[in-house]
Image (cartoon, rainbow, N blue to C red; front, side, top):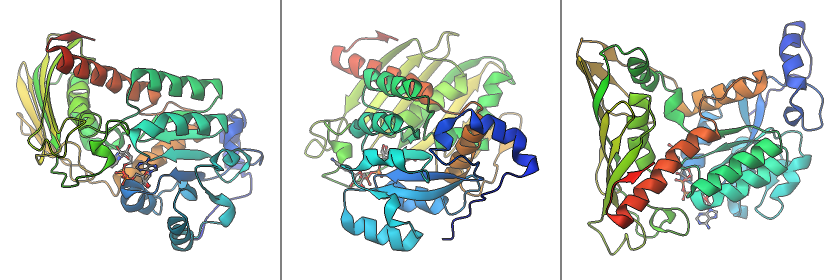
Length: 362
Ligand code: NAD
């Protein structure tokens, strides 16, 4: 890949440059604007390898500038495949030196959830903007520490909620906002897949596994985004059909949410069942999405015959482009750290409900 970076300050870029100059982290020591931000991926597992790195070949505002990995053989492969200069390759020990690298504007944390806090905080201290994968972290305390670290170091934090950048998801969010069919009465939201792995971090409590933080946030977001409200109480039940694999964390979670308007949601998430759909019943109509949180092809229909089926080239590319454009313009991010925290607040209440067997107020 040939990296394109313009080293000039065009007349038309002057207005944007003024905004850029107010954000020193974007320059990291090299005082010139860039037409693309350099992203360093931390953790080169499935999501980085199969989705983010390919998406970064399509982005217009971002490019793959660096990597952080604990596996030297991966560093070699990626270096060759993506033409990454040696000086932009880090391991987990020397990662903090990224502070001195003007090529890297954004650190994208794509590690198991229990590691998100440490790497977000280290990236923020290095003066880099941060993208962090979902779930933001295993606890509310972690999320708050991550937001604080970014605020203290004057860098921005975005959560990798790719669906919130998808016009198909934005379409059903707008139905609630505009009250097209009146108030939301009931939501049914499901997100799950069959995971055949037997020894992965998704099955480890210490690494932040369990289906609730993983596919569960999609089921939860379906309910939160379809109502446009934050839940005020939850009742949840955890279960597993494969106790030999799911020894420490739940394989399946069912949870019921109550919203301030009186709307209710029934949500399911599982590592044992392939399912991905959303149904919203309003006072005067309904909306269905299936799938509701896929990488592509999210689509739906409404009771008045409206079809939701926007084509997008690449969801992850759109997410990173929009987040980088917001960083460059100094405008609001679509899914900042506070949005990740909103989900984890509910996730904590869900676990509390499972433990106590009671309805938990949020
Ligand atoms: P993965 O297991 O495939 O990759 C994890 C990476 O972390 C690996 O490169 C691994 O070497 C590294 N790692 C470093 N220390 C580790 C440790 N102690 N234990 C295990 N791995 C360690 O996982 P993934 O599916 O790529 O998920 C990574 C993150 O991305 C998670 O937060 C996950 O929820 C998120 N994710 C998001 C989406 C999405 O659609 N937004 C999809 C998949 C994964």
